Image (tube, rainbow, N blue to C red; front, side, top):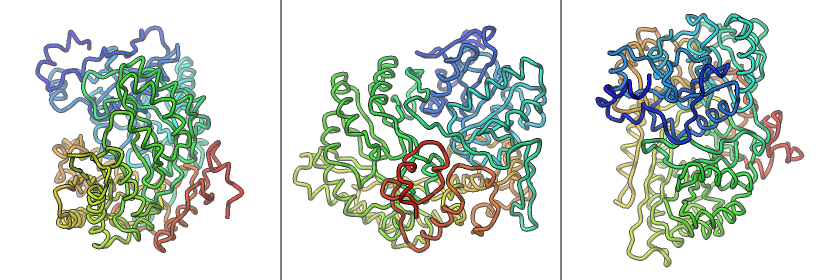
Length: 618
């Protein structure tokens, strides 16, 4: 399906630029000149997917091979989907217009649980059965990677393969294997059995799950020689890892309309609610010289005027001051803004503030997460109010007037005092602005509270904790709003019902596959978008499938319970997470990895900061 054939339809949709391809730096290969075709699918709208760094990496990685091509696919919005279904237009890839069903690999990136129904919808739009057992031909092989595959079980009936961990190395190994098995005319079962022997490849159909009478998991048993534990893939040296030097430049303004360069993977902090911090251990840093080289290359090839230095905690990057010292002169000369997301309040040096003051200012973002010190200790945030206020004062003196503060509600042991503490802390930041002698003259301060609800996630110390019911979260949100006494503080809050669904699927098991398919057949998709979320259809789907969703959210789990994801190995041990769970309930903190090794288990994986501090194990 090429743009000229689509033209008569695209005039009827809201944003036709989502569906035509042909953007700067897009790569088009002749399908007859490659052995393997890979359709990289992002299960959300174009503007969301085009901001995703993982897609950019895999897209460039596969296209760097002479024997393979990779093309992009996004979920069409509802107006385009209606036209496609009415006119028999199958889901197609942007570069060539080829139907997705004709690709050898259909790969989804799973970044958030509320995209699950979009996966089924995209497979159906492609003209493929949604269940893996009904796709009997060798190709297409439907795979998935990303954060959510740490617990693939709620989607186990739909994916042939999931890939826990880093994708840069395992993607090439999987392509090599498929190329070999395709050439010799193998069956899908033969290929999947062989693929299961590649480290970091999970084939759900090769595992049988049994349940106890109370509904908990009894056992997960592998078959056909598949490993008992699937160990996540871990790239050791980020300087030698494949990284793209050009990005496809979108036609439309995206969620993050800038270039992104990764500076490290992992996190040293151990915040007990943060799944990403545990899934990506151990810490691996990229050298400042390599980061700058990649930034220059991407800006030169794309024309972007903003660079985001990407990590889970940017100010923990040991080469940050050195990097900015060399980057900012040419960035300033070329009017390129340098964005530093995910800054720590307690290690934001004045030298860094002075360097940032030479470039265009955007708002500063910090994440205290909890309003009182007691609760910050419970979640192991390891920052203090004095850190927050002193950093705010330094920012105001440096010319900043907008501060965004991230908080969470629904945290374990939370009280009304902790919620009121969020408003009090935001007010203290406002007061700090007016106490600052060097604040910008003639300007006002704006403090925005971004309020999320805790969703306990696998591979965190809170994976055993109950999740607040939506009604309770709404009460807490309203109470916080009543505690805010100034217009200088704005509150942005999430929809608790999306957090509820996210919580069900985050810690769910295979029995939820039926629920997801039932809800999708009722019309549910784009569930992360408030205007599309249909709570009644979801609750009907749970009831029809005989599933109590609160079994997965509101129930406190026993520490000895077999969890649906226990056969996945992300390096961090279950014993370590149990120790952190117990420390949380005692209000005890754990030092960062650079202060003292806590023996989390990630040292078993190659590379990482923890290998440098093994002598400190206790």
